[in-house]
Image (cartoon, rainbow, N blue to C red):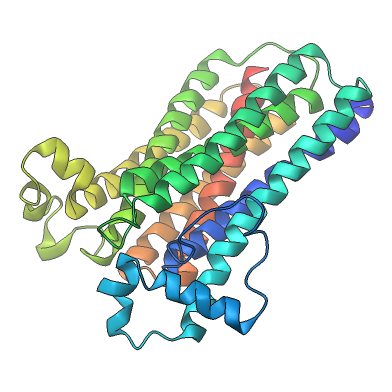
Length: 339
């Protein structure tokens, strides 16, 4: 680890910035700020408008788009309101720019100083591509809300969110490869369970994006059953034309899948914890699995309360932040069980 310390710190800094970006992205979504910037320029949008005249010009441009024309025009929406939502979207994009600089500049430096071996260079090039693609996905998502409907596509939102989580997980994995350079015998049985848990957690994150994009957390605000005391509410099957569409585009269907998958993720991690008790593990493996069990229970509780209280900002944000911690711990645990 000592000889790669600066590279490890660089990668972990990238992990922190990705965490920060996803957190601000959550605030942006929960405050309905994501459509406030109606265009994208790599350089000229680096800082927000600096004069009242430029603020007014930006506000007038915003008024040409569906969110203002169909929603905010009826809400006595003033320039001060626009400045608030503009800030969060601008800050989200600004962090994205910082991440680009923090990755590219040290990467070039480490290449020149020959601090990266061939395998790490390949991994970093993948990260470079992932970062650029994430930026494209952000604009691809925003664009869907600037045409006819004053809301982004929930498919694009879920893609943008999930890819950010995956980029974070891969960055952390590359850092862990350097922190733990010496291979050991993998815990095959536990590794298989952890892999299943990881896959289902990613699917759950995708459905979390669906729930956010469709505002599906604002209905069926009951637990453990949905509305009218039903485990599967009748509306799950009638919002869309087919069952597949109901489970991917219907608010009730998407919420039902998200709340049901939560039980699956908890069960898999509980199973991993149970099986680990009969296996001789290293201390970091034990800590990873114990941390997983704690965090998944916290995440489950946060999800329930977020639903019961109809997604208040602080609870919705806490639920998303803890999902990040859960994925980080899952990545660490899977790495320690695999290498």
